[in-house]
Image (cartoon, rainbow, N blue to C red; front, side, top):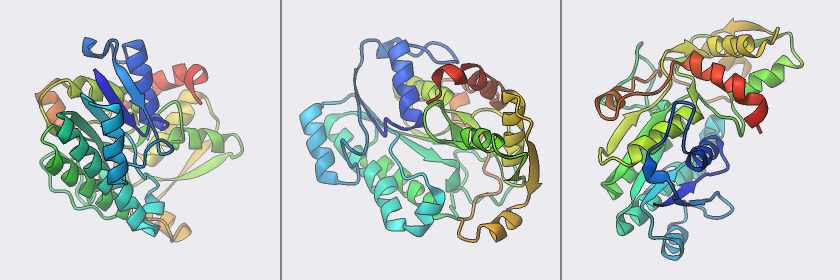
Amino acid sequence: MKILVTGSHGQLGNELRRLIKEGHSEIGPIPEAYAGADVDYIDIEDLDISDAAAVDSWFDAHGPYDLAINCAAMTNVDGCEANFPTAFAANALGPMNLARACSRQGATLVQVSTDYVFPGNVEGERLESDVPAPISAYGRSKLAGEGLALAANPRTFVLRTAWLYGYVGKNFVKTMLRLAETHDRVTVVDDQMGNPTSANDLAHEILSLAVTGDYGIYHCTNEGTCSWADFAQATFEEFGKGCDVVRCTSEEYKRANPASADRPRFSALRNARLEATIGNQMRPWREALRSYRQNFDELAG
């Protein structure tokens, strides 16, 4: 296979590289179709996917590709709120450009999206069939990217995930661990519910899905729902940190951080379509976090 992975320096890009190289994830083996794959791992310094001409030139020079996995995105939620044109270029126009280039070469595209496409005003888990209505600039830009990619290439998978953490790069778990080194307590929002998700698990399901022809929208998170405060508490427990979690409401956090973008209250996802197609292998979130702790000293960077 000839594969392109954009955003390869990020959490998910690094896990895709690891899995393709090693042939397995923490869940188990990946499909044999990836054995001997020729993979171009690139990032913004190699290609700005928001530049349509640059994308076309890259595909002409380095393709034809069988598969492109787009991990490139502007994920700073507050930054997207402050600069929507830049967020839209990265999160909407970029996927469209990749989808068009993939379509010309008959390639499959995997576009990674987010739980933030939902408003979060209804309790429970969101299904793929639920109607999106994002409340933040980040969510709006990612939803636009979904639609533009699906419209430009019929061979497109959209995988919505949430609360992602990996071994390489910045994430909530690492932030909590850093704060625990200098604080006896941290204040964390307790009324926003979602699914902590291992980048290793997500990479496994992406690679499993990408070799099928079951295109469309999927939810892909670790199993189980918790609050950010629960996630922080579990992190301290798994890593043996004696730091207390002070739980606060979204309103209290907003008053302390007035420039912050609104976040959905209830954005937990259910992996219904995974269950109905290849099967849902995503682990319970606490089990995945425990594996992360066991491998952290060796793999974290």
